Length: 216
Ligand SMILES: Cc1cc2nc3c(=O)[nH]c(=O)nc-3n(C[C@H](O)[C@H](O)[C@H](O)COP(=O)(O)OP(=O)(O)OC[C@H]3O[C@@H](n4cnc5c(N)ncnc54)[C@H](O)[C@@H]3O)c2cc1C
Image (cartoon, rainbow, N blue to C red; front, side, top):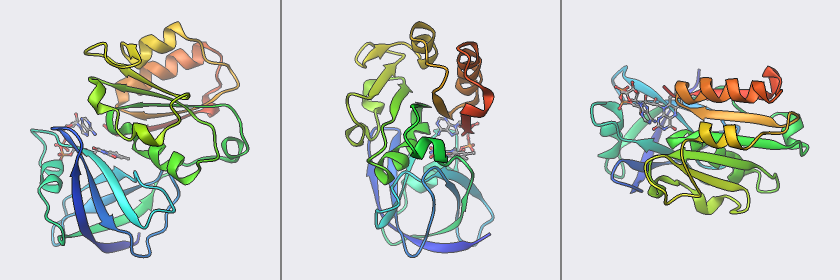
């Protein structure tokens, strides 16, 4: 697997917990939806991160939530411009299929930083029409909202009522049936993915039309 050094251009703080780390792109090629393993040079330690930027951007962005008890995400947040990181990849198969590219009805469902691959889809393919359901705790966690078509993006906030819908994505989906010929892409924590899969299957969506990427 290809491993290359990339330079940190900047760290952009979005909320007290979440930030974008921007690296130089170099000649790195990927498909929207793929992830990389970022490693600290000289150490074996690394973590997976989905690519947040689009295929036409001349930089590589990653959307990261700092985990207070975690070590790697905290390390990334405090990197200075000019620091080096090892990037291994691209990896993964959470990419758009032909049916999606040819205009099939699509629903993207994310929690938290799970919006990252979807941001890459939308930046890379502005011509495609995705409906997006984004579950977060608070409305200031609507990362990248400005990149999404406001008529097709719905923010579910579970800890206050300042989003478009007050409650978790699972509650929203139980109240709003999904057409059985929709292709669904799910990204985020495993609990959400398991619960949403059960709901979608009850609506008659076949397993092959439910694509998933588990972050933790
Ligand atoms: C394919 C893949 C893609 C990923 N893409 C991203 C990404 O784009 N952005 C990102 O922030 N993380 C992403 N992750 C998670 C990431 O790899 C790390 O696990 C995360 O940054 C925490 O690392 P840490 O060393 O700070 O804490 P760790 O000690 O490794 O983790 C501590 C705990 O934090 C929780 N946790 C981990 N990641 C998150 C998260 N994103 N949001 C909330 N809680 C979390 C889990 O409960 C975990 O057990 C991805 C994971 C996988 C497998």
